[in-house]
Image (tube, rainbow, N blue to C red; front, side, top):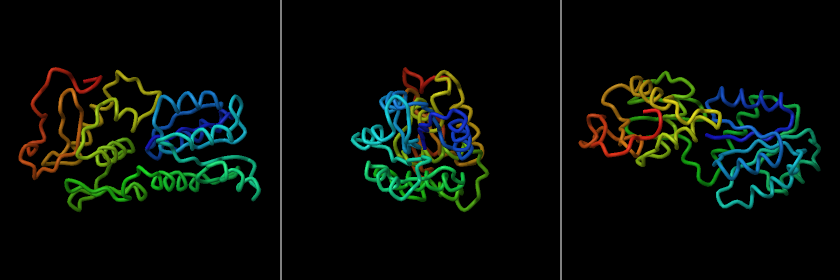
Length: 242
């Protein structure tokens, strides 16, 4: 899940980003409306945590711009203006939820996750495939009934692969979905995390690699992917850092 935090108070923006990242989310930050609009043109987001009183482009205007986009993100308006009238006007602008400051962080997390599930392109709450059952809301994952002890990034990586299954996700796709804009695109972090995840998932291997294409979840019942090894190599490599 990729989140954009738009907040001009830098200390609060950093706290929000750190807390959301601790929950396995990829988080970018913008400190004004202009920077936020630029990031919206560059990256796909599931949820935008939007301060209302922003410099550059006001939060109200930015909210309207977001709702007009074809593949729009869900908007959680986060602001000190918390009267009933303020909430009504914010929701009228197109915000999907409204949370007044000060707020309890666990509530913010729950609202962000609920918005991500409500997004039109969101998948079912529990993801299933190749013997895996993953519940993003409860942060649980099992394989053939066996509980998986996954790190935050391993869980997010498995979630992204299950959401895309049976399609492949390239290294670049995974960096966008699981990490954030601060990640070096030439890092081998995807390869390393895939390796750790494969070991924790156990045998038979279900994450397959196609060089020049990327990674995917494959049912071990499929004889072609039974070994879990790379598909026949092609000329290009599967992204940076390999």
